[in-house]
Each structure stands twice: as structure tokens, then as C-alpha cells.
Length: 175
Length: 183
Length: 232
Image (cartoon, rainbow over all chains, first blue to last red; front, side, top):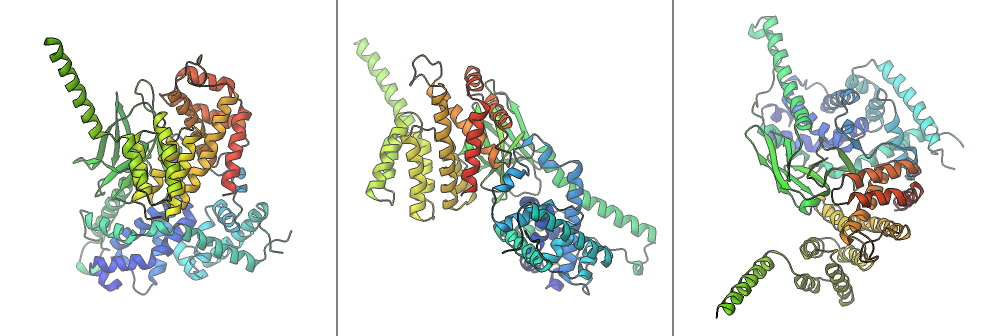
């Protein structure tokens, strides 16, 4: 099918998008935390990927390639948001993470999502790619363009950090 | 209270992440159609090619071409997103309020809010790719949002206030004062 | 002869004006007729008729808006009948309690437009109705009345209703936005910010609210909202 898309068959590309959109969205959502930003990043990733199909090496796994594209998009957005924060700096969003609000969300998995959201931007992509997309260390290294050793270190540190945050939120081992 | 061990932590992460995505799954409905529509509407359908020394281009020229093309491409995408953010907004001329958003790639843009009973009122597309609509608004407070291509809801990024609605949605808010001034 | 002619002309013009405006705007009777056609029990329809009529008679519910709501929720929606009925009856109950319902109707229509499940819409308006009740009670406790309740008051029912709506709405926005409901000064500041920007409210009324409603008064309602959301 990718062959057909390479030849310009847009409908084939549509099938590819349909197949991979949830996985790509999951990665974007994990990294960006904001659902509508993640939705934008997902569409964006598939648009860019199509326009860059010439660069796609069929020897590579397609999923790894599209994850690379979306991860880079997300990292760029995070970096841009640090300076311009488009939606957030204009006026007041009546919003924001507040410990008191977090206390109202009792569902355990919500607390886990919160913990992931609070992770350092640097570590979050690796966690998402490992525990949402189920990539192995080598694949994560390829997507993030980091040495495999660094990936392992990031994951180790991220998990320690997550444990600490989860304890604070009262998520401990089930009795 | 015991800490989570490795296996427990990994299970929690996997479950939590999956549930998070599932809860947002409705956003993905029709995404492939939107992507295809966007690709079809782009003015330059040809894809970028990497330099091919086999064709005999001098290396420098080839690199320059690719660099220029990438810059235009990236700039166009980036600008499109930024222009949407910078050029949308409200301008008040006395008793009327203009809703404005720059979105050249959209097939349709509408606004819905308190003042339309949340019915979609279409904006008009100008030749510059900017969509506009004038509305008479008496003094008060109004929540609203734009709808792009019939289904994608987004708040007006240039509004001075945003509020959360129905979970994760964001609406924009505009106030009309006694003298017709807006904020 | 001349006198009769003149009167006839005036009557004719008045009748024309009446007919043309009636053609454009819905009437109270049309609303009641539409309620009669909804797929609910006789008792439920009687409740809706009584409460919506009271709302229209007291100026809290414009017939056009009632028609729009009844069409969207009662007629066009594919949601389960009992959920649609409950949404409409929640608004009816609010009208019986003499609460301003603009916020509830707006949230319901927003939910329909965005495809929110009817159960979600119901929950939202039930939560907000509870807030409206608390805010209205506060207005009464602190002596900020309309000239219908207290003839010496300079404020119309419309502006009191608008103020109640804005206070309740800004409290809801504050809490749903994730802000701290225990920070009473911040709560009051958020409320006053909204009141000052809304051109419908007389400046004197905003000052009266500022003077009579303490930070604790408003903070208490904010905490109640937070509890409602938490328990939902």
C-alpha cells in the first residue's frame, strides 16, 4: 500500500492514516498532554509524511518512521511553547494544574496520566514510546535519534521520578 | 505504604496511557478524510526530492534547492499555523463585532456561540484567505468557538479569555460593554 | 367621518404590525403546542407546560428560545427519551424556582451542537442549576433584590437575573478551569472581573455585590461546585 501511496495514490495514503492514526495520536497526546494539540500534531505528521514519502526508506519499519516525524513535531512545539505559548499567554485561561483540583480526580489512571504529564519534557517521549507504543530500546533510540544507552538512562530516571510523583498522589502498591 | 515495583509501575503506565488515548478517540473520527482534504487542497502537490547526484546537478546547487524548498515548505506550514493564531480575533466598530480568522486552507469556517444558540453561522472567505463575519451584539457576555470544515471546533486564539466546557473543550469569551466596547 | 377613518387606519397598521411580528417570532401558544407533541408522559408534559409558561410569563424564557431548545432536545435528538425529558424538565424546574435559565439553555444547546451525549448534557445542567440556586439564595440573604421583590430597589429583574447568571457562571468557570476553590480572595476577584466587563449590569449593582458579598460567601459556593464535580 505504501508503494501505491508513493505513486501518488491518495486513497492508499488514507488507508495508511486510518491504520496508524491512533498510535500516532497516542504518542502526540503523551508528549504534548493537550488533546487538541495532539490532534493537530497527528494530522500534521501525516501531511508531512506524505510530502516526504520520497525520503522514506522501505527497509525501515513504517511505524518507526512516522513516530519519528510526530515526535519531532511535538518536541518542536514544546520548545516553541516555552517562548510563545500561543493559547496560554493571551489573556487568562481559566485553567492550569492545581493540586487542589488534582485531589478531586480519584480515578487511579487519571492520577497516572497526571504523573506522566508532570514528567520532565526531556523524559516523557521515551516513556510514551516504550509504554504506549511498545517500541524496544533500539527503535526508541532510532525515533529519538539518541544512543541506546541514553534511552535506557532516560527511562530509568523517568520511572524513578514517576514513582516519586505517584507516591505523592497516593498511588501505591495495591494491598 | 509500599512503592510500586517495576512490573506494577509498567502496568499502571500502560493502562493509564491507553485509557487516556481511548478517552480522546472521538477526535480521530474522520481524521484521514481531513488529512486527504488538506493534501488535495494544497497548491503545490509535487513532493520534495532529495538531491540525486546521478542527474549531474552540482552538489552546491542541489543542496541549495533542497534547502530553499524545505524552508518554503516548513515556513508555509509554520506560517499557516501562526497566521491562524495571529490574524484571528475581534475588531469592534461601534455596535457590530467582527469575527475574523485567517485559515486559507479551510473549505469552510463557521462560528457558533451563545449569540447563535450554538447554531453554526458561516464566515465569508476573502481572497486573502481570511474568513470574516459581522455580528450585532448587545451588551453582555458571550461564549463562542469556530468550526473549521464542519467538524473541527477550536476557540478563537485572540480572545482575551478562555473557559473550559464539557471536559477538555475550550471556548472563547467576549464581553460587550455598555458603550459597545468589547473585551 | 374623518375620526372613524383615522381610527381604522391606526387599527389596520396595528394589526399589520402584530401579524408581521407574529409571523417572525414564536408565540407562547406555539411553545405549549410543541410541548404537547413531545414523546413524554401526560404528567411530564403537564409539568413542562406549567413551568415553561411561568417562565415565559415572567420574562425569563423567550418563546423563540424555548422553541429552539424544545426542537433540538425534544424533537431532533436521537438520545434516549428519558434523558431528553430530564434535560427539559431540569430547565422547567429551574423556571419554577424563578432562576435565570439562560446559562442552562445555552449549555444544553452547546452540548447538542458539539455532539455531547445527552447524559453528559444532563449532568452539566444539573450541576449548574445547583450553583444557580446557591447564588440566588446568596443574593436574597445579602439583600440584593430586584424591584419586583423589593419596591425600593433600583434594579430590574433582568439585571438581577443577569447578575446571578454571571456570578454563577464565573464561579463555574473558575472551578472547572482548575483553579483553587479554597483561595477565597481569588474566587471573588474572578467573579468581579466578569461582572465589571458585562455591559448589562448597572455599575451600582456591581458595587453592591462587591460590598455585600464576602470572599467567604463566594468561596463557599466555589467549594460546593468542586465537591459536585468531584462526586459526579
